[in-house]
Length: 302
Image (cartoon, one colour):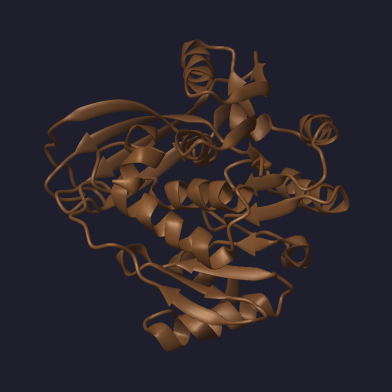
């Protein structure tokens, strides 16, 4: 059976990464080591993750009409992503993220969104008008929330299977949750959405149930090295992640979401899709960088 089309709508940034022994405290300067400049942004990361895993990927995004934007655009095309819905805005620079990574692979990130904030409802509507029913729409929250909410509603009307990764944690109207096929928060995002402090599996279940009662069909809470918890009408289950030595956790969640979309596009069950996504995300943390760390299908099979 042919796979469904995947439409990723979201941010594109250039990541400027410094490796250091420890993350600085407020007001502290630490000496870092290796400096890397990579393509990033949650939307772009998820699009690249899905493309590497042989998904049929289209990207809807706003870049600056500058060197960073042009480099990102050519990189998407090299990855085999359709960029017909990517615009380059002359009025604002491309997005940038400043990332510090410690020796344990933990990170802290500051983002200057730039052109990502110009991804308007009009651009979104023009793209969604051309999407056929049954396609998968994958969204995050590094673009205007109003655009995301409008896309969820219009996507639902068009019969799309909508996955929302509510990251970074933001103030989204939970009224739109009833239109979602899947919501994929991590622990801190699930806490933000529910007000429930997550510190064990019981609190994970409680938070998942609260989100499920907001109308989401499949709640998938990602738990880092512990895997992911699924809750839907039929069952609740913890899917464990393979054990690996983490080098850099940057974009592991993006890898998970891109892989989830690919597995669903190939008509896998939600459980099968989450197992596949956990494998992909676990592989991604064994490498440095955001898009650079995204695995291929053959790497997952091996």
